[in-house]
Image (cartoon, rainbow, N blue to C red):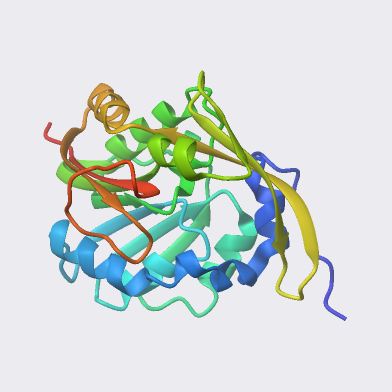
Length: 244
């Protein structure tokens, strides 16, 4: 019998959920577009072999692994030790991982690009202003001229289409009670909170944190493209640059 994991007291509400999900996270349909998403990132962030990328909220490492297979050096951070362990297992050369709270990043330059996708460390907050700390950490981690790609859940979509969830108009946070299953099929009822945004809010937040927004596009998992924001897609993808 496998020895029980020594799980520390959580620093974030998502950690017990990640611990329960484990590798089953990668069974969810939203994880199946990794290759297309990385194709887009390589093309539109100007990534080449040898580029240094920070993956904030890397989860089990699906984007970091795919980018590393293309010769890109990627360092992933996640608050879940379970996800960090999964990401480290069989990681391709050039992909490294560590447990770190995205709200307390300690990097000071060194990265050509930063990604925070599928809500990652940026979206799974509760509307209390911690997203500013995450974006400031992202800005500080990049070299001057570096570029960030961040996905954010759409407030428009959440209000119009997110059945079974409640939307807090004051904080811009969506809350839902849902069921997640572990790799062995064990079911668990969990609370999920997601920060939601309008394009204007994203521009203001990133500008406040020293980033110049180059584009905001309406996207879905596995369908990243440059297109105008609409009310009909679940996520916005922001590309922003550190100019000084």
